[in-house]
Amino acid sequence: GGVTLGGADVEELGLKAIRRVESCVMLRYSRLLAGQKLRALLRAFNGIIFVELDDVATHAVNESGSSAPILPYRRRIILGLITAAMMEVLDTTIINVSLPQMAGNLGATTEEIAWVSTSYILANVVVLPMTAFFTERFGRRNYLTFSILLFIIASFLCGTSHSLSELVVWRLLQGAGGAALLSTAQATLRQIFPREQQGMVQAIFLLGIIVAPTLGPTLGGWITDNYTWNWCFFINIP
Image (cartoon, rainbow, N blue to C red; front, side):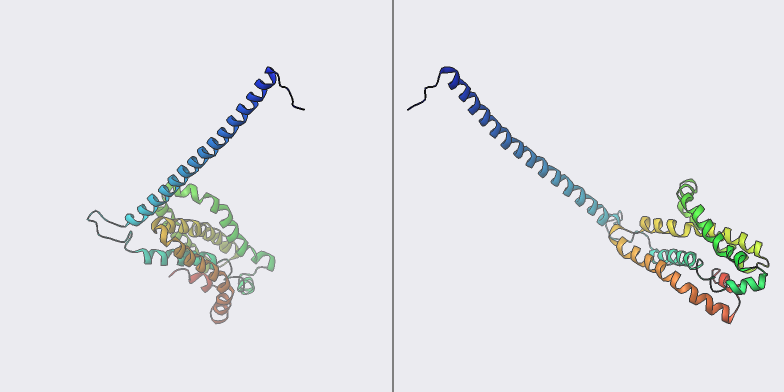
């Protein structure tokens, strides 16, 4: 009942056994090699993280070895940047309640007085994509300072306007100046504050941006009832 194998059959079985052994060895070797590569990548990744954390920890240490703040007036800087950004966002909604009074004083229709709001938003939308170019061309500090000055001057001119065309032109300039107060201010905060403080700083910044539009209509209505619509622009000057 036994099976007789010839020389060719024995040789073929031997080759199959050798191939199976080779495949098992190669599989084990490939798994081992993959594991080594993975461990090497993890070690390199952990090394990069530790190096970056060390850089952050030692960035505020001066040459003498004692700890010192990166910038001594960071609280004043964040207060100024948040205030500027809040005023930029506030001006998008503060005049909405004052538009009927503006239309009556300037002799404009409801459709015409809407350009006071539209011109500001339009200038923001046009200038905002160009803030990166202006920052690269003139420097972030110079461009931010110029934008704040332009925003304040345009706000004063808006408050002293005596016609609808004047008001729309100054609102265009105000929106062009205010376009940089959001993006450039946020980029400045990322530059001057260390990485471990970015979460807190950005949360405070966004809190001001969220609160400003909600206070706009209420503040604008109170100013219009107790004073005149001109003071909706004059509050930006201080």
